[in-house]
Image (cartoon, rainbow, N blue to C red; front, side, top):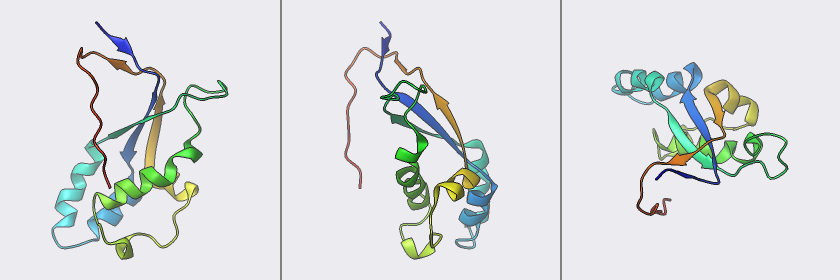
Length: 115
């Protein structure tokens, strides 16, 4: 039986500046980074507590998402851009907000802590 989850989703797709950055990391990076254009990441976030929009504001999450995406390509923060900002995030990623999250599985959702 489908269950609605009290979360919204941010669907994040890397844009050209992120792909270019990932491609610059080492000799093999360009080949692997080109696949990024076809990949997405989905982040579950709170619904908008003020009910002005269907998802909570991106400003609540952009830094965490940006750092997760960068760390996926380099754990060395010296490789990262010096100054991260919401404006840069919006250039480096295309973000779609989705307000309906439905769990089609009957078992419990498991959580795993990540660094």
